[in-house]
Image 1 (cartoon, rainbow, N blue to C red):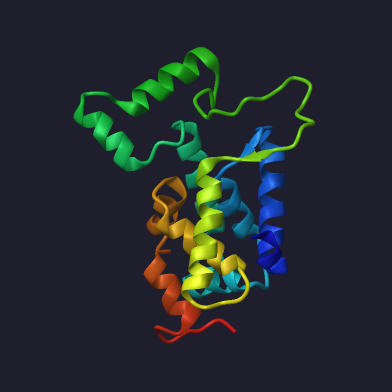
Image 2: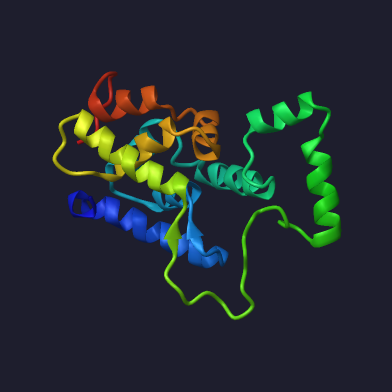
Length: 187
């Protein structure tokens, strides 16, 4: 599948690995793919972000992802479901961080000596890569671009899709700006 990736899409995957390395985690998740997409300039995905008014608000997306990671990667729907059971997620996060330090629920397994092994992709990241392939095939595109990765992130349930939707990036809005289903179209 990777042979069908454009240069931009390959750079997103490499950027996701870099984000995981910086975080000191052993595996690459969907949020790392989104963070790498936010770093891009001059690509179809970066055009889509700009067309949707996110060029100046990328830091807000990064902060929302960090906050979700702090909540153990739980979405608002997860938090609402827990609240329905009488469980206050904010209170739990505060108590755990009070005892174990900030970010204790993030799931990051940091090794004191660093991680020198090869990083693997978590299932959510694999699902995004497969979703990008489906998006490209569905449009009869021969190559998988970074815009297909972005589209796949909006479809797969989870924190990245929730954060994107909160910032006005949905599959529908992306299709409008990328494929001319509205007034703007990426070149």
